[in-house]
Length: 442
Image (tube, rainbow, N blue to C red; front, side, top):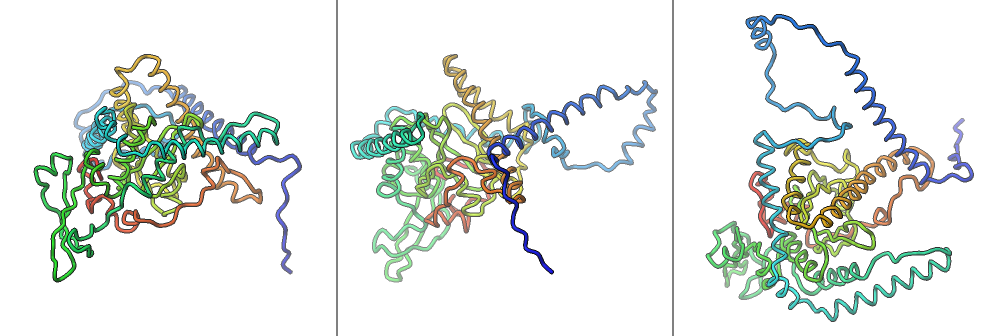
């Protein structure tokens, strides 16, 4: 006879958050014990006595061993603290050069003339009015919660956050256009892709490293249309069209123009987006202008089913590996990270930070170092929360492993950026050219 057993209810006074904290403490204790045990085993192992080495015997021993051309596995060292190591092999050196090239892009957002040009195209009155309305509403909601909870409650977002949110809505719905195959400039009919063509001198001067060529599909027209992939933000302010690379590049610069702290995030799977810093939340916020997505970092993995390997955020303050923010569950959502060892990647990002911060005042460097530590704690917390969530699925306890509000967001529906999701063409169809560093306007 089959007996249906109901899940055992949690004991009185049980808190899922307490169990999550206990789980985190258990993981930290286990890691510390593993490190201590390794140190004791190394200290207790006797030193072998010196022996006379026979060169002929040594050479025969080496010749009998198979020579492996694959670098040693670093999986056994994952639990050890990572020590930055300079790149030495060819693959690591190529990756370093690629990241150094990409890190230059956000520095161009500081051009005063470009910022003035950006402010000239933004309807500032509309943006600030909408931001003030939303900010007032959030403050009223916080005040209402204070009356109920009898304690101080901060608004979810600050005024500057509301400015970026209003800018995001205007940019997506009014200013910029997503382009797959550009329409015929003569008759407006759909066009057919013919491939790539060299940029003209004027196009090259405005940052177009490549140009896509299209032909009108109408038999009585056959007009050719050029689609330069501009990397220069000033050119994007004029054309106001592109794919995810152009969207992220232009929107990031506009965020900088209205006073936001901005990061340009590069993804090895051929996607780029933006991060802005929230003073209210004291953390970096994911923003994807193509999707009008705000603080929804799990969009790509859990929403679109993509696997991500590297997500590197670049700004005028340095570079940071933020992959853990977007791929929380590495076994399920992470792609292979084989460009370089993890210690080398840490060395490269530290190198870029030193390069960008060397001329900053000491107080600014100290503040950024504290932000780095806070962000590292945040990124580690995502991994722990993902492990706790997996652990919670095996128990009849609701709420285990739940994190901040962004964990509960529903991924956005499919939009114009599905080119990247389905065919990998959001970078003009050159997403497979991984060895060549991508340029701005991907």
